Image (cartoon, helix red, strand yellow):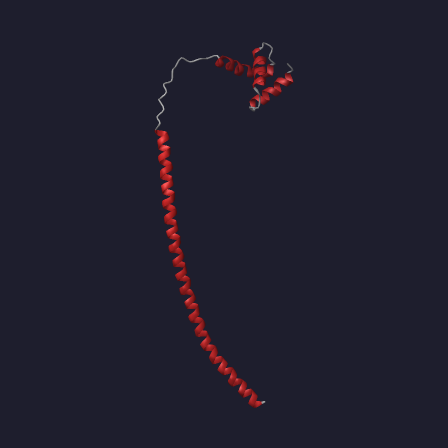
Length: 143
């Protein structure tokens, strides 16, 4: 194996980009007796992996039996969610109707106020019209 190829594979290995075949090639290289001196520090790492791969344990892990309450709990949660959604939706529609009525009455009141002010302004315009006709009569008589 070319040393340059091993260095590139080692770089890819340290960046977690190697395939299983490339890792096996690195394992074979570092298991051999002729490892380059500047790569000797990685030999212990690959030796540890080869030893750890063969380790086995005798400890048994007790697993709890699975309870089927999770299934019924999820069904109950869906039902509660659906009821909550419909209740909220109904309350929201009632609130929207009440808000629309309130907005209608407020708008009606505002338009009444504008109408009263407009009518008060038109009475003052009548005085201006009377003044204008009097002014026209005075100018006609002077000319």
